[in-house]
Length: 416
Image 1 (spheres, rainbow, N blue to C red):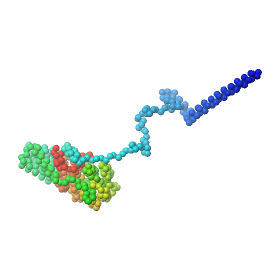
Image 2 (image 1 turned 45 degrees about the horizontal axis):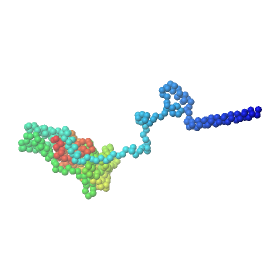
Image 3 (image 1 turned 180 degrees about the vertical axis):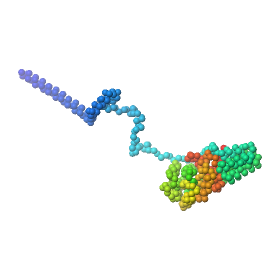
């Protein structure tokens, strides 16, 4: 009995020990599961039931498990469709990197003057000018009778050469061809070339007076009627002067046309030329005065002042233009007054020129839109009318399509 009791006690002790070990293990596993699942809330029961129902109806749409078996796995970086990037929100302004910021365009280098002359001659020679072609065709006839000379005269008048210059040119051509006994078309062409150049008068000084005296800048005042391309001409003139090595300042005294100052400033910025401007509708004389004053104090070579286009028939506007010139000259003398004329306006351009010359003492003519027109004779007519030379011509829409006028090159292009 004593041995049996001792064995029972020993067996009970062993059982309790095993039970205790098992209990500890169970508790440890339970604690580990609780800690591992902390922070991951289970979805609501109704959500689980709904998703299970969807999976039963559409087994092919079963997602790839990511932990709870209910959310699809994220795609790998290379699996993202490029089309999805169209809807990506751009970064906030403060998040832009330096390389993302658009930089200002570089300052342009205007084309050299010499290169422009060649290009403009070629363009004019390709234009459909009836002045040169018509005269050559008539002078190339086997017999030059009275009817032919009348046709030559009509051709010159249609090209806006003017009545008096036309009569003089026809008379000179008739005399020379008769006296020299010309029968060859090439010789007739040579005589025509010489007489056209003589009518245009190569003795004129066609340089732009862009330099002042005694430390003052040269002041170029640009005037003209509406629609002649005046502001564009000012911008192109700035490029001509910069190409010649001058330092230039622009004055935006056209305060009546909307965005005229913006347009002029854009032209200047392209070649690194600053613009003095004022409020829209402001006093143009005041702005012109400030521009010349700034140019004088800043040591600029040239100040180019743009003015508002005005009809030559409006006395009040013409008087205002005279005021602009007088106010400028309180700072520095105006060294050049350029009148911009649209070559396609013909004889109307002569009327405009006459009125402007009376108000501001025009010293030079700029002919725009001279390409592709039969009105090349306006060069002769306007010079005879005003007694001042054509100094610049525009033969296209490009930024550098403005060049100094060359009589011989112009005639050669017409007769090419």
